[in-house]
Image (cartoon, rainbow, N blue to C red; front, side, top):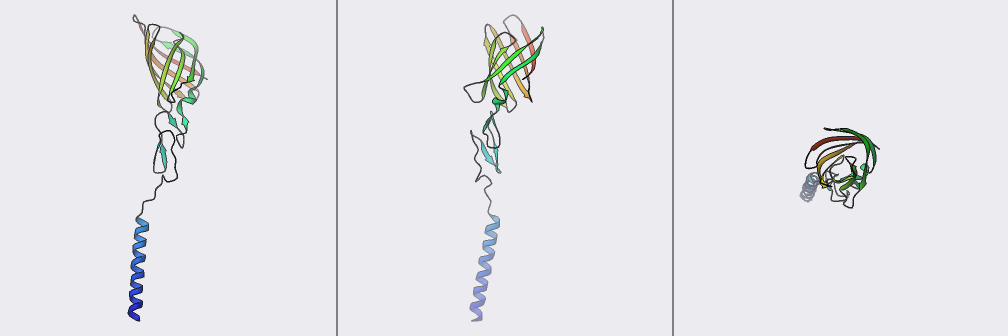
Length: 161
């Protein structure tokens, strides 16, 4: 009878030790209850968002905070001007449309580069342009170069909503 108790006790302790090791060695899935939107991926319980999206679940389009009209001053290699640039949503979720660049009704399509910046390039009306923009709070800063085939002008526009 004592040997049956010893065998049962030994089996119980062995099973208990095995279960304890098994339970503590399991890796818990921290992403099990996390849903990342718009192509975001979960790592360690946190969403990593693709360019153009932000938020806890990648639910927010980064470009949306840029939308509005900015009143500002532009300083170029040749000349200074005060005018408005309007930024609007684009049909592509990671792009925006910037109107009145160079105070010359030039429209540029920007592509989000980070949650607070975009890049753009294009040509319109015989002018070629390339640059980038960054938003800090309600201040938009746009650095760009414009060439009309004869002259090149480097400009910085700084405006607020």
